[in-house]
Length: 364
Image (cartoon, rainbow, N blue to C red):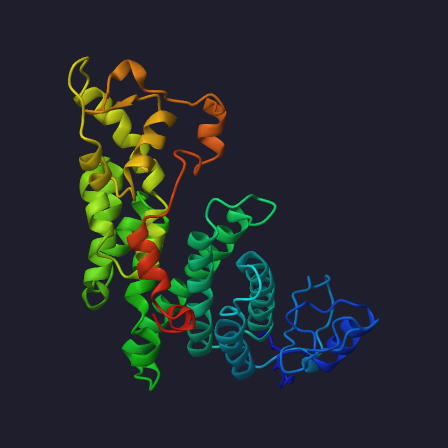
């Protein structure tokens, strides 16, 4: 049986790393002690230092004094979500890069120690929420600022691992009740629903939701299954209507699929309302597709070649641009989020940002 290391570092960052990063000027702006920013060698604020991610060399033996035990990892996650994520003096993309790196380090320490189910579930839940929140908040940013592909990769890796741990815990509690049962699993429906929404339209994700034990098939999960089926069927009217009923993070993730549904809606309506004389009301179009303003509708109509007049939108089939001038068929296959210039719906923004961020990440 393989023997795993037990971490002995009781601080968020090992002393050895603090000294090394001080002397090599590798302190992050979030870790520098106030008043020392302009020193030749800025000093570290040890209460804010968090171990950074470093790739493990093949065959390297890990020093237990540099590995944080689960209790410290939990403390570190809490610190990142309450003290760092809520910092309003630094751009969110800078905060994101910092937290994302430190979360990779936390996950690395978990793997090295083979943390038990209880600790793994408790640590992974806020990590998954962070990646989901970031996927929404930084959506549409230039790749030099935010790598959505890498973020989604980490999100899916952590989410799958979390769901696998839920499954393992289910097996465990069938044979032996545990004091952690209720606390650990009470948020499971949120993450089951998140998995379905993130993998919108994918049969495997839908089947997982359908095959869940009835106690986990809450209204959140049922709505996520329904949403995914609506997406697969191209039912843009009911899809957009259902989004409004989800809690903040799930609504935010679901809204990221709106560009695809809007593109599909334009295509369908250009066939259904193909007329040289009739027009479609802008306000009704805005309501159906969750646009914020008439101007936003007009902008998207222009993107797909539909003229907008005083009486409404002329949805003639001949106007529809399957690919806009800067998009090719190759783009369609390799760049899944390009479909329509996207402005986040105001009601989603209110849902997300009216909630205390640390609560959203730790407890929602």
